[in-house]
Length: 318
Image (cartoon, rainbow, N blue to C red):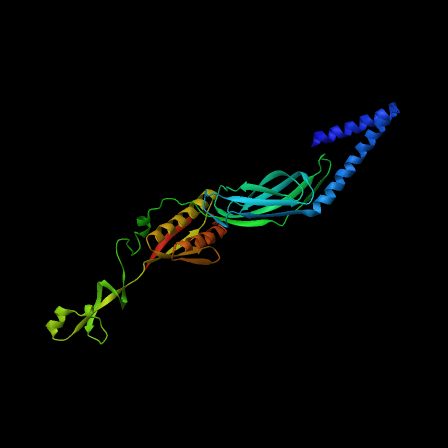
């Protein structure tokens, strides 16, 4: 655009000089036209600018790492836009850094201009995507107008799934993956385990009768079956970090461990302990993992005073 401005000034200067050196009518017409062009360009911008519409949408609000993730934008203008620039800003709460992308575009009158932008953050976290500035320039590049569009999105980029040794984490708990647990206080309907025996009551089913013991005692004796209880854990997280790398690795570990537990039908509560409070999140099924991960990456990582560390341990619960 700078070259166009320089050429325009040179053409204006040359045509003005020719008028002074010659009384030819065409040079006068050329000089007047050159003077009118900027006025027409400015008028075109002023007429176009108020009637520009912009809207957009993202692929999803919660996105897996390395998944297909795009921002779709539509721009509509009543008059043609010869040179437009859309500045997109992306801010990640984990890295506390912003990145910007400038998109050049042009549009025909009334028709929609569709722009697709690929979003591929380098780190997990809460990413705020904002249309920071919309700039339009006239065809000669002499004038420009800009405004801040009301276009903002928030995406939760989930941590990365990494291998975790679930048995290692469960070593110090009282839960094993290869055993079932039954209530010690209440009976149930699991015929694989007997809770206790008692005298026959009206309404007991035939299969509950303990025939050998009934014959031995000379009275009907019924079996009470056991009540299975779900395995459940509390995962206590104390996040203190000295670097972005250790922060993200910690998030990856917590997320991956939660996925492994649910795959093994172990309900759990993750307790995030910070300097000021504790935030519990309960995960009972697969869809809860996403909600937990959104809470996890929304936390402001705490920085320990003097020493940086992060701890993750498990308490087993019956």
